[in-house]
Length: 135
Picture 1 (cartoon, one colour):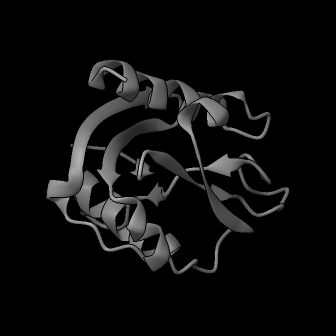
Picture 2: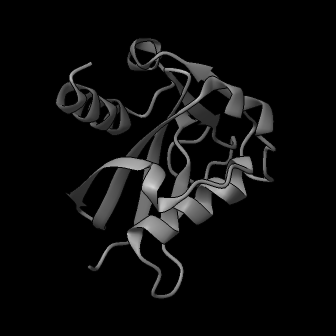
């Protein structure tokens, strides 16, 4: 599958893990609440991409079997894969924030959807997952 990157809606104990983007004018969505993930490296699969990015950004090592939902989205700049995972809240204690971004936090999906710093298309994609999950 040709894709340019992957993102993960990672729920820890029912709350969504979000990352505050750096405040740099040369990046998309500076200063906004982002989700773990990023650009594809080499020939990696969508799953390998999102798992690597999650490990690099927040230090959490997840397995492909932890990914419970997946969907591809076509955008003007290419296809992006979007995943969801639900893990125990205690995993938050293992977060080791990487060198990109200003910080992280947990918030409910509802709070993310209302937050003016949320990235709008990620709000929509989290909603797709929750509606298909039945939550």
